[in-house]
Length: 435
Image (tube, rainbow, N blue to C red):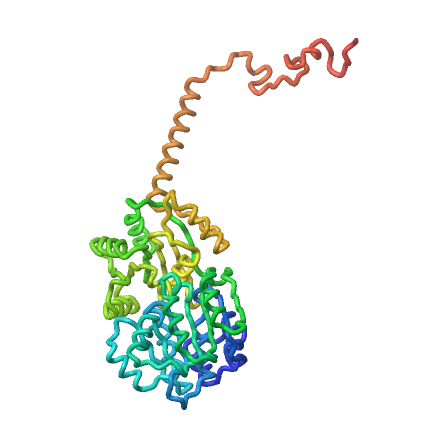
């Protein structure tokens, strides 16, 4: 791995990164920084948790001009959480470049955003809906922005944002540099990229073992009736510091959260129906460990970097390998170990096999404490039955006759007089039979 100075990042920023515990560039940063800094369009495919944010943020800041009071760079993300996450990173490194950054997303007071836009930030980070809102209000001018990043483009496609993204791209400068960063590149996303890109460089970092090596992955056989009890058993036996529980729907999130709360756990929910103020309040409590368990939809699977998440539970199995990787990627970060547990019922093993093929790893099945106790009890009963049968057999065995010891109870008829070899009965040992 290279250090950031070798990649051309200024010394003041390198010191900031070292202070934050970041000393060497990750593979995606090592490959992407020179390409982005060179002004090339790029399609960068890398798994979650590999440092994609710094891979595009640092080289773009190196190319920006601090003395120009117009929006120069636009970063588009699919979720508010990812926007806030990138915004926090930008607020850390932007002062070293004398660049002003602003995050725009739904749930905030739009009047306050308009006021902040009046201070002419050069770096804009936002969700498609809120960015379009400001464009229509003419409070955001992007005609001079010539650098744009589409982060987590595959998720934007799933959420139906690609049409909005095209509107934003048309509002940018004609000589723009377009960068696409994502864990996967579906055909529709690739087609969009090639429509607006100029001879893009393709960079791919494989989702190999190092990304998931720090995460101990297991599956638990379950059914809808037993899931909640099994989840409580995992919480009680594992004693997680922070745990994230992923469900497929908002309704399921609320049901699981209420059931855990009734059992006395420190738990809250996170999903798209919450206001931004509610989301911020929940995340603040979870980050400060006032909550032990966060039950959430896939809205929290990307863009959240929370220290101390020791366990991830897939209460509902994810739809795809990419979703699985993003979910369990919330733990095992920054060199720490984590544990990911997935509940699977009898009809979901096809999905599980597809996930295993995608991550190129067999996920070990784990027995619950209750099932282990049942198996132990069954073994004890079987052992008792075996002992009773042996004792009964000894009791009912017939005694040997007084002549039994002449040949021994173990005699196998190898004295040349066996019924199995009748031809040898009339010959002496060592004597051939006469013809």
